[in-house]
Length: 259
Ligand code: DAK
Image 1: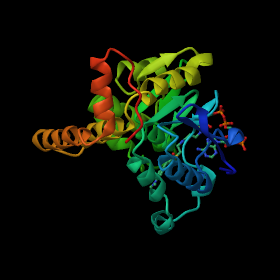
Image 2: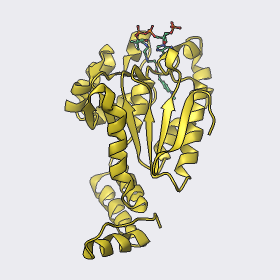
Image 3: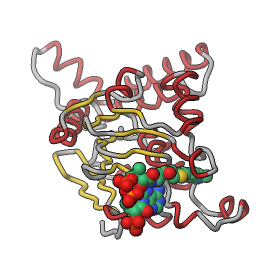
Image 4: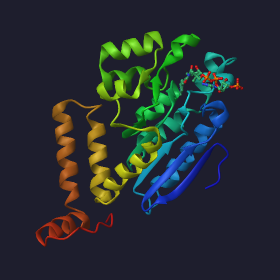
């Protein structure tokens, strides 16, 4: 998979794909081409049976410093509305395989929103996270007000969105926004280690479990419980369920095929 602004390795490790955002001079600002490439890569990786988890990363200085301000500065409201950006955000949302963000440096604006679209987040100590759109006369537009508020609660979300302040990785961890903070040289390694703990499980059960956790954001508790139950029953249609339980009873490691 050849792209200009992202580097994709479908087999960075066994069953684990890596997408690296690659506009380092612009701190990985998310221009439209990069977003289109990200959409196409995610779609392809989601359909690739050899991929069971996807890591999205940037570089040590920046995960992504937001949407490309140069590209947006002169746009009208109608231009913004007509740009096909949501196809990428929608693709991230509908990707069935787990996505892990490996974040170092700036994760701001659209970069923070991209990070929050991922299922788990590993950050380096130097990560600086925020929604600074307010400082340039706008506000979050790709889910920041909604996902951040659900993750960290109203008080901190208001502070981040209304002042544009950055929070540190430790603050993000304490607020429940991210999974782990590790020394700078470890964040990518830690993301692979987390991915490894996912990809040796049943891909069928992983997909159904991811879908069920995400359903919690859009349903009442009773609806969510019904959804979960149906996905639980569906696991029993898989060979992986038979293999998983048989392996447990035979006291051996299970070998899951995703069937
Ligand atoms: N866009 C374009 N270029 C950027 C950029 C960005 N967001 N962030 C940094 N750069 C560029 C800088 O212009 C500079 O380029 P040159 O001047 O060298 O050509 C280079 O990257 C290095 O940046 P700095 O010189 O500023 O580096 P510093 O270390 O001094 O500062 C910084 C780093 C991250 C604090 C600073 O660059 C900064 O404040 N950047 C802007 C952060 C920001 O405001 N982000 C939010 C952007 S608005 C939507 C989808 C998405 C969005 C909205 C709607 N829809 C689907 C509806 C998202 C909106 C946003 O993210």
